Amino acid sequence: MRLFLPVRNKGFTLIELLIVVAVIGILASIAYPGYTEHIKKAQRTEIVGLLAETAQKLERHYSRSGQYSDTQTVVTPVPAGNDYYSLSATRDEQDFTLTAVRKTGALMAGDKCGDFVLTHTGARSNPDISTDVTVQSCWGR
Image 1: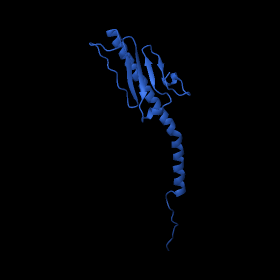
Image 2: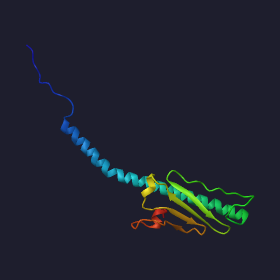
Image 3: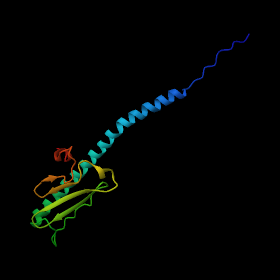
């Protein structure tokens, strides 16, 4: 005598798969903006550090030569920036202004903090900052 047991299919139904895909999609749509903002904050921190480091180099240059602009004996190059910001310096004998401008087409192109400016007095500013943030929050203070 042979007994036939009912065959049970093991696996997922299409509805179960669709539910899982929908849940993953909802979680991703919630998490992605937070992740992107975290990456932008890290890039802002990096450019603020690069501006501070460059300002320190220019202060050392001033200590050695008595001016911020390059001399024949002492030259202090300014870095070009990073993947998201272009760094430039305006220097003369008694002052300098460092400017970090967002690169077009990069992740930071539409950033709410805009561009960064640091002067020889230590004044920090963001000329094209969004109205919902402060200069202190953009500079990490």
